[in-house]
Length: 176
Ligand code: HEM
Ligand code: HEM
Image (cartoon, rainbow, N blue to C red; front, side, top):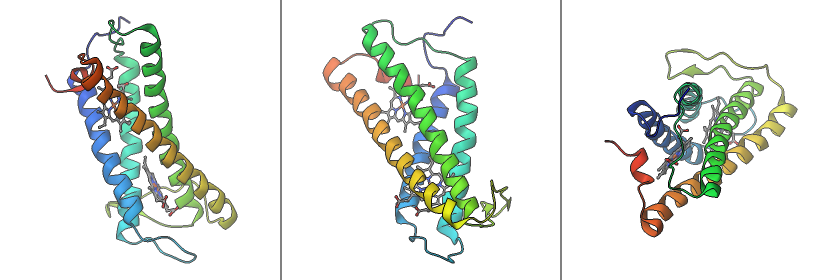
């Protein structure tokens, strides 16, 4: 398959939709009440879990789209920048997947029954297990911070391209 030179509309919509959903997801995650023993998921937790599952579905579709519609790195970039940007993109996919899956496993080990945006019950990945729940909680938090750090690096690199290199890298992901 020949790699395209530009991102198409679908890849751009997937990209900015993931950015918007992740922003909402972090805000709900930090603002929702802390969980404690015996807590039943309220509206903020139901929303966090539902939009987390939406992000999981989106990233799976987006990854499948990327594999079937590969885009070549900008040819004017030096090889080290082409390789490092590709590596960061793969890492972003992996960390979004890891954050969503650890969150889902954690919610399952709490023994919760949660609905997807109050529409239908979500399948859970295991039954109540307090000890396993505690260790996977640490993993969900580690993944969410690792993802945030890599997003920060990725967005900072975009700023460097806009203001220092003053090249067209940012335009590749913008409409048009
Ligand atoms: C990429 C997607 C996700 C992000 C960025 C994210 C982020 C967060 C954040 C920031 C917190 C607050 C924890 C803290 O105080 O540090 C949190 C907690 C939590 N998340 Fe997620 N989450 C995601 C996906 C999910 C999914 C898919 C589920 C379940 C299906 C989930 C279940 C939970 C639960 C149960 C908690 C409470 C545990 C705790 O307070 O430590 N998350 N998440
Ligand atoms: C405001 C924040 C962001 C900016 C300014 C930004 C900017 C960009 C730009 C300019 C590209 C194209 C790079 C190139 O052509 O080499 C890109 C690609 C990409 N971005 Fe972002 N991005 C942001 C946030 C995110 C977030 C939160 C994610 C997390 C999933 C993400 C994941 C990706 C991926 C995976 C690619 C590669 C395209 C693909 O494989 O489909 N970006 N981004």
